[in-house]
Image (cartoon, rainbow, N blue to C red; front, side, top):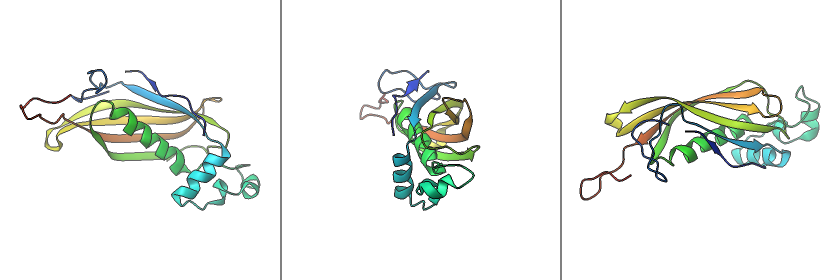
Length: 170
């Protein structure tokens, strides 16, 4: 699976960016571009235990309405969740709470996709010890602009832990 590096534009709550000291704000966007080749689709489906022949068997998939191998929804779903984990923990400790995936179109082998998220809201969660970041995302075919998946997510961005001197680490 070929890919370029992540793109970042500016997210939420009081979590501090470990690298620069900046704060995650509503409106923060981040993305990456991934090409889904047949070998990666087969390998992921096998690792995930997805035996659907549309992800493994080129002859079967070619004879289907899709005309060829397509990616398992768990494949691009997992990449979207991994992108969230990687980006948001740049701001400090955090954990995923909830993700929703809506599959709009099949993702054919060979397609290059932009995986993108935006922070849409920040909800203080003092009883949970942090801020809940609400996210909306898309998986979009770079060549055609067609959205193949829409996503939502909620992540808890943990408040910095106090140090021995009682000061927050950041």
